[in-house]
Image (cartoon, rainbow, N blue to C red; front, side, top):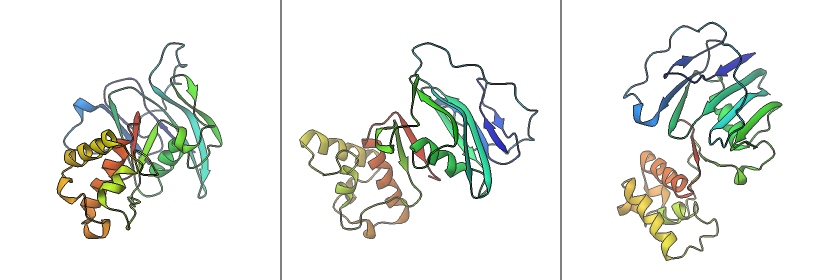
Length: 212
């Protein structure tokens, strides 16, 4: 059974079973390149209990799932301002973890808490996550502006201030000149930026990126 674990320490590699690895770092300290993985450490000591405080961290405790003949189990703490990068070969559990966090699959056991509230019973739309999928999931019949606007309101009934948020996100990602185009008129990299802009305008606490 595979176990992925993060510990409250300096940025480290964690690879209990030598498969998927997680790089944990403050966003301000993200390295330009991710270092090569090191040998798997000795089994870690049990994670401390969640403190009974006004905790803004995301806590994942023994979140387990059997999938594709494999058994996955994840444990970590994610604090405000931190960035986690999960690295591993195909089938190591990278997308599985994102699916569990986003609520697209249901864990067999374990706990997922944010602000001391359990998240497992919440549907994807009510969780504090936005997921950027590998496929981008853009609508070919809608313009770039409209595709981004879906992140604000799925019915696209945006007011002037909300359309300004769309324009600001597009400018931030270098898409201002492309707002009237359709996704089929864009390169793959441009399509990815449109999907990222749509994710950003949702303004959720956590952004899940699947092979960005």
